[in-house]
Length: 350
Image 1: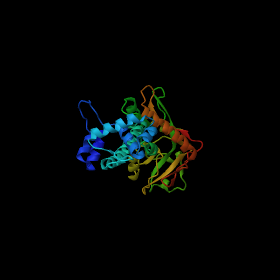
Image 2: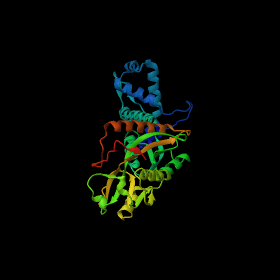
Image 3: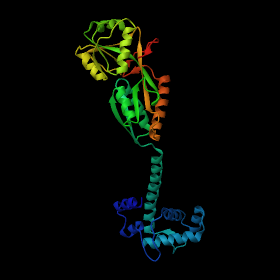
Image 4: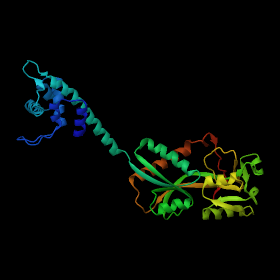
């Protein structure tokens, strides 16, 4: 702080003799360095122009105050007050120091408050593994809201499948993961952050895309080439889903990426089966909720159960929990100006 103020005053072209005010001096009196308290003493005397009144305001006796001012004048090498007149008067040097002292004390107070404020604010980095689909949009909302109050916190994303996210979490490469349930509850702790229905992503030229309505019974996908989920547990669940209606799933491609699914559908490779993600206009595809029976996917925010969780990570998870609870109560089913598909009442988790 002292050096900073020293350079500040140098930029203001403070007279050379006054630069010693910020210097460390060694002599018979020992070492001395500028004290903000002495500046406050000086300003109080300058305001009162009376040592007795200034001492009363400072809750000290008059002789020590006079001595402090004399020492300050001696160290600066200038007279700050004209004592030859009936009433105490500031000298030209004293008037200049009033202005400088006010600046320095104001800056010192602001710096102290800023440093205290920094000590109260969260800082650091959080690494989060996130599965494709709706999860990145959930995460983006949380981060935007969290950083409004904690701008010094940084975030790092690692995208992949749910298995990729859980593996990074298990290896300690990520602090948190946003993945799809189910998960190993003996190894990970977490809570639900959202649910979304499974949809059919259909090439626009396909006859099923021409049907009216936003829903499509799964039986109507009989024999159709499908682009299914890559996660083994999810692929098995998809086959069971078709068997519920006496059909077999004809999976010709598997992927864990929504963008890959869209690309394959655009080229008429097949009909994608993927959790609904945030609406993105695409003239080449049509989306319909799969029903009879309907299924949904549940996203969860996870961390390792037995690993150390930092204060920063805990603050973020607590924030997300509150954010999710508030969103459930108050957020309408809208995203990017488009109506989201409502999860059918009879839907089960896939």
